[in-house]
Image (cartoon, rainbow, N blue to C red; front, side):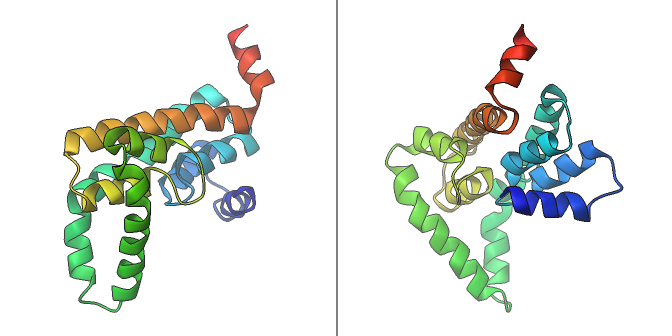
Length: 166
């Protein structure tokens, strides 16, 4: 992931670091995790980076939760039908893990930074499996907070975190 983040940083060079980490946090797959890695690489203070990355990661979520089924329905009538089928298969594959514990499962799925997890995929699963909007939103937000804590430790290191509290 770090190589991909570095490639995006290089491609977006010339714009402010804060905007780069916001844009990276918007991307599926990278999300907040990539944004915090980018912030660390760009030497953006962690406390400044956290709200920027969270905002970038949260921004697409309501659109996914509210509109993804209609968008998929429309796209299935285009040349993107194979891509939509793959996304739905991915959601179904991950649904079993999530549905076992419903809201807690969704929170953990979004919060534990592993490949293929995160707010985008969690939102997709929540929308396709008709979670209540409030439950899905709270679980996804909780997962984003959890991912933030984990990724701050990974990206900035424990010594940095300890020094900011002393």
